[in-house]
Image (cartoon, rainbow, N blue to C red):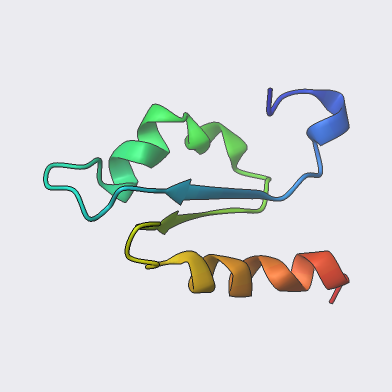
Length: 71
């Protein structure tokens, strides 16, 4: 999907959820399993999140907000 021409300039934010669960995937494992090394020229970020605890979501939105406003 990320190789589609329409998405070549899209910003990618990955929310690695369930980080509160023991033995969850590390960020490095998520990065590797999604093949993000191939996105060398793309703007992306992976965030550790726990939706049930509300962790990581604010940081992710703060990172993404400037892309929405164009600043």
